[in-house]
Amino acid sequence: MDRRNFLAGALALLAAAPKAAVAQGRWILLGSRMVSGTFSRDSIPVFRSRNPITALSFRTRGGEVQISDIEVIFTRGRSERLMTRVTARPNLQSRTITLRTRDREIRRVEFTYRRARTSSRSRITLELYGRR
Image 1 (cartoon, rainbow, N blue to C red):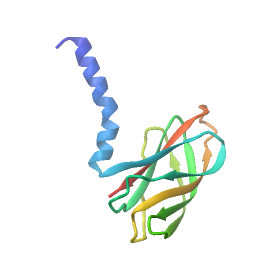
Image 2 (image 1 turned 180 degrees about the vertical axis):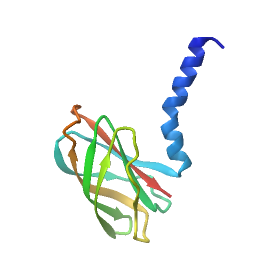
Image 3 (image 1 turned 120 degrees about the vertical axis):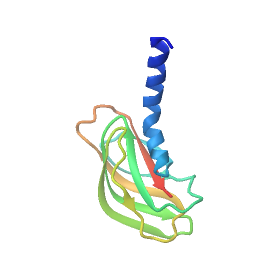
Image 4 (image 1 turned 135 degrees about the vertical axis):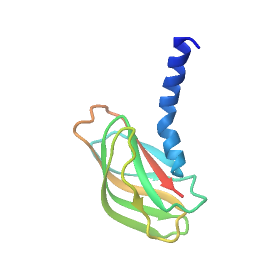
């Protein structure tokens, strides 16, 4: 194997490593949203929640976001308000937020966010993950 092929394979493996680590922990991507303002309220619709979700986590691409006032709306009309603050950093999974409600098929997640001052990019993608 020549050096170019080796480097290309190593880079591909490194790029896939975060996704593989998420998959091993039974974390699935539930949805994402572009956030551009410095402070706002938004929501992420969830389309992949056929199986019960027991916990949530966030990750960003492009900058740091501080999330608060999280409300999870379930498919049967119930909701759960999570009075917590979460910091989502680029390419790192945030801490785990365990859901208390038994009705765990999620329709959408609403939240308030604030971009960190250190985030220089104008567009940040916020990703929502769920654990089964």
